[in-house]
Image 1: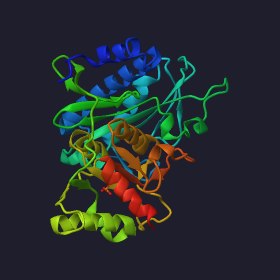
Image 2: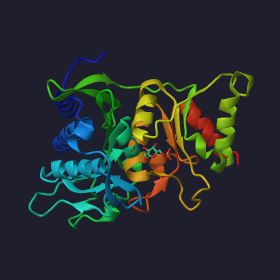
Image 3: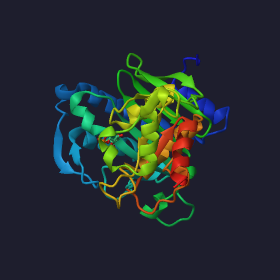
Length: 335
Ligand code: P6P
């Protein structure tokens, strides 16, 4: 049981005692956590706050934007633009990067986020969440550009998510393992619940949208088919299935009890490598999972080694319990 300390004290100790994070990064993480508290408040109000339903617009992905998608995006922009710790931000909800306005000092970090992942669940009261990733701006005195964001996930200096579910829980890493905090609404602060989260290397639970089965590539079909054969099949054990259709909620379950999450390439849109976005979904989740002893690949290579070429590029995602991810990946390389 971790000592019940606040996020602030945890970050100060990571900065002072462990020397893991400079003060500017500590400030950044505190501000992002505060923004997540505001988003949680808005999400929890639901219809009472008039925030459900669609905003009547589409994002760069061509997806209908929910009112809460836009609210969450605005909360993160407004919370982070003045602090002097950021040079620019990128979001699933914005076509291009958002450069910190000249009226504020610019910092050395880049913040990327999916402000409200799983928004198709908002109107039906199923858990959703915010995913964020932090990079350092490349050295040099030129202004920040979109190309500065195109760094592999292995370059992240911090990553995390906040899941808005029965509890509002923040999970983050600065490269020294994974810590989990739950929002104490009476105090208004995130309280450390657990540090050094570890994902079991084996599992009996997979998460995938089974309705896409006929569109999958052979290695994924083989893996899922073997799971479905259960004890009598080659795996010699029965499997369970979960699919919340909210990556944050599915990944959080895996962080807590293991499992394998898959959103693979499929032939519905063969030119798209996958549905999920590399920079602000797969990279932060992939790093968190690795920091907790799991693995994350696109079926052929480590997700954190993928060199991005576009801000909103997509990627096939297989992540979670190490031995299962390695098995699925081996089926791809067996082709
Ligand atoms: P499908 C939510 O829209 C999301 O981006 C992820 O959070 C989630 O895992 C996936 O899409 C769900 O996709 O095709 O099952 O609705």
